[in-house]
Amino acid sequence: MLTTLAIGNYRSMLDLTVSLEPLNVITGANGSGKSNLYRALRLLAATARGDVIAALANEGGLASTFWAGPETLTRSMRDGSAPVQGSPRRHAQRLRLGFSDEDYGYLIELGLPKPDVTTAFNLDPEIKREVIWAGPSYRPANALIDRNGPLVKIREGRRWRVISHHLNSFDSLFSQVADARVTPEILTLRERIRGWRFYDHFRTDNEAPARQVQLSTRTPVLHHDGHDLAAALETIREIGDAAALDNAIEDAFPGARLSITPSDDGRLRLTLHQHGLLRPLTAAELSDGTLRYLLLVAALLTPRPPSLMVLNEPENSLHPDLLPALARLIGQASRHGQVWVVSHASQLVAALNELPDCHGIELEKTLGETRIQDQEILDTPSWQWP
Image (cartoon, rainbow, N blue to C red; front, side):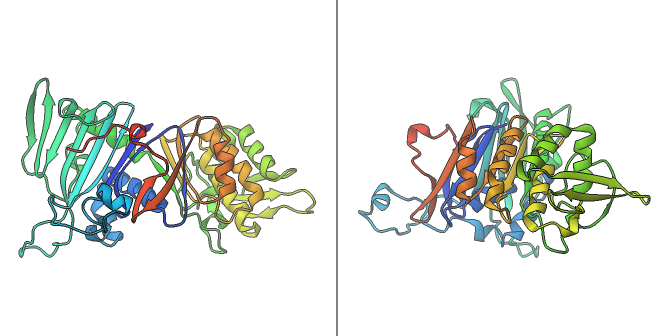
């Protein structure tokens, strides 16, 4: 479980440190930075897959992701006694992302390269620094692995040993020096991060993958596009919590019953029997909201819970009457793994905040900077960048 997330110089986040719990609900007004927080976490996940550079390119390039305000927002700027204005930059621009969990912490710093006439990739960001440490926050004394430019060193007792002098600027530790014998911490963190799940692109239009009949294969983890919905629901029924599945359907649609039937050609057919109808409805006939709710059920009741699941605006297309049932389903999932919900639906947020151990994080924007509303200095988790 992540305990702290830190973001520096990324879009509207000049310097943000967030404390985390098993169930976290991120909310705030439009434009407050909810999407930026979500995208920062996705960039962290991309480092473990080895494609953080490509992920930044998809965002328009590193330069476009940098904080657009002054390098430092002074106290006088914040209280309005001085105008917001820039000054000569004292430090090189770096995009900084980091987190700590119950065992380890990790951070990455990315910057722009020096102009080089020998390459056509002068806009590709470079990985300037990566550090893995033991404990809740970075300190030089608890660092285990330190990558500075092309140089990678690991701690052996009280000494450091260099294990690489020539790591490419576009390659992360996770893709190049993960070794079970030499650097088990890298391998452990890489697999943890690769296990994070993000659900934010469930389509419900007429051509949505979830509406199509698919070949059946056991599916303990729903795909991010939901094309294997019928197989995922049947897998829950066979090897997961079938009672929870039936309860989730009954909670949202009283008197309804879900059926998954195999055909002779190895395909699964999803139908929903609803009270008052003379025949069941197929996936192609379901309303957008009903289909999205079934997709969320399949994701949240997975027989293989991840260490972290992130739902971005799950309320889209859902009727308000379904939101309390969704909140109860999310609360149930948070007992098996950490869950983040990014939402602007006040009814869903209110229902989630009524759950025990729910950690509400309300964002606000001041002078273009995303901050946590009412967060005092004493409430800010301990965090230090190298």
